[in-house]
Length: 362
Image (cartoon, rainbow, N blue to C red; front, side, top):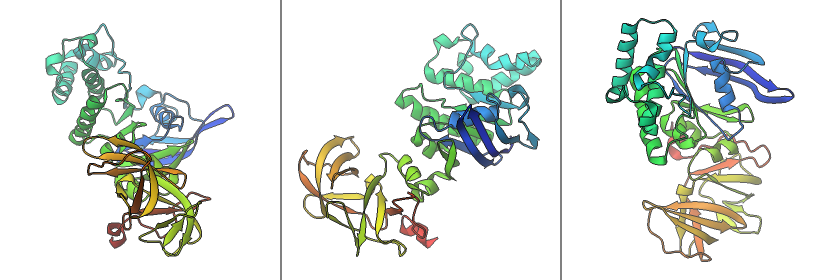
């Protein structure tokens, strides 16, 4: 396995700048996930690292080699795509060993490497089947096995689970993470699913408009987002935001409603945006700032309550069963030291704020 360095990487299609000066330092054996909304450039960045897209500027290094001028086959990388890209006329065994056969490896070596990869991925009983005889999850494991037999320096995954149903995605997430732990592989993984990013990554790279917004561990980004974009992108349901003016220990909203705030950073005065997770809102029948119930969504384990507070919709997640009705007025309050404060103009996190006491104590 190898390190990967991306230095001021740029990609333009005519006058359109798709990747705008991205720099990353990926450590040996690290599981990095690139996330962001559609069109943010994450798949383009992955393809540039793979050599499938030309580089307009900057440098990509794998290990000690600058690979800008190298073809994909000379970079010693293996890529797993979302559509599996299996040969339908070949068996599982033939699909997994085909790249080695093309490279001129001996039949005995191919057979050994395929058998080892099949054992890791629980594919041994399926080696003589063809792709049409496999489930979606089995096909994805074959695509992963085809990558493993090549013993690459870096594994690249481009939204590999997007074609699977919800239950199978959960299963495959666990399998890919277990594979990483077993192989100690350097993995760069693209997804639009922030749940995949939170549960699998060593570090997450959040992209927007071809630029890096923030890099960090899943909990660093969740607990200490640098700006409103990162705060709103990571977390399900998404973070709530309210604009208003700090007055004493409360936030005055646009219509004059006062929302008490348990804690306010010393640097925070005047107009601000506060952010808070749906799980950190207490909903009561009477006490607190008054909001109107819009929608109730029971999920079994908890209940999602969509409210309107001073013309802004906010989502709350409560663990108990509730009997609220649409149109009902309820009171809300916010959990102590679980509020984020952002500048309303720059949308950056206000310096000196930490999202909760455990971080302040570090």
